Length: 574
Image (cartoon, rainbow, N blue to C red; front, side, top):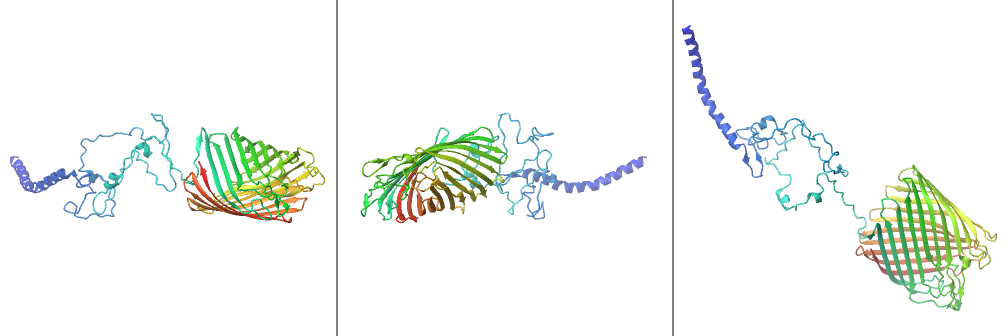
């Protein structure tokens, strides 16, 4: 027994004697490696980052890692890479953090409304924050130089001025700031607010020369000046609407025409100054989402057009004609179906004519009242196409039963038309229609006035610099010619605007019209070509040059004329 223990202990002693020298050879390098890892664990770097020496982001070829770094290799954090990281001072977290499942909307102790930010098309969306249990984010890829690059270079960050969070729009809980809208017309009038109304005003003053302002067969030229004020007020209400649009002009001439020309009476007045004013006030009352009450008051002051056969011989000046009235109606929507109706009343009066001999001539036989109604039904096929049908009827009652030629001018008539309004990709918008107009007179000697009716208003955005417009209109006007029922007037206008620069615009306009004096046998045709060049100095000051040529061709001998006008002026607007 004693020999056995001694023998076992001796065997163990012999084994220890063999292992101890091996441990002595291995222990120093391990101690040295531990000491090196401890001293190099947090080494200050020139980029301002503290990285472990054995971190994958700082691993270099050498004794510790004999293989050189592979730039294409996906370097990720792992447990083996963090074995040397100290956790001293770190605050442990257990379970799920508070509000980890809260959405972007919900309760806020500050009672602030949380809104999700809106992103523009093709804008990068930020990635959602990682939730509980999510894997740790990937470490950034190292560059070829082995250095960790800053997201913002220090030079750019140092030169960038500080921005307050409120100005940057990134205050927590505050809705994101909206991007400012692009100003489509940088030289347009801005206007001023008067209470809840946006008010814009302007005046154009121009002067030039006209070769035949009276539209005579034998031209007589005169210096010309025009003063044209404008006023526009638009309400800025959440509901209802009120718009006032007033525009006027006064065309004056630096002289007068003789009472006789070549021994014959002058068919035009000696004083050919002409005022013109057009104004209307439109209102809308939103009773409900689908029902609106509409109303309009209007006023028009003008004279007979130069060269018109309604002008008396021997006039000293043009008599003024004033038309005023109103319309009241409603608009009702039934889903995509819209029904509109309204009643109209208008009155037209003429000023007494002043003759060259100093006497006055009455125009009461031209005064009349008009009572009528209009209805319209439309259906929205698509958001851009809305066909409609419209019908109108009215009666005209004159102050005097018989006119100066002994005819009864009281009549009744109206029109019916159908068309559509459309909006095709914002490049072509407007409305076109075609119909039929007719008017019957009490006097059996006056034939029925009728004809096709065309109306339209189109805007074609050819490009960002060029815009084309087309307008068509048909009217049934009164006349004093004996035996003539009335005048059926058709007018067509084409206008092209082109911006050479934002401050330099050219406008070309061409107009064509026909005047059919039914029952009298006279037909007039008018052509007009106009070119404007506008230099916009500021939002408030423009310079405008105009060149216009007008032609009147008539089947009545001695009634044709031509005129050319050159004008240069300024426009002041606010």
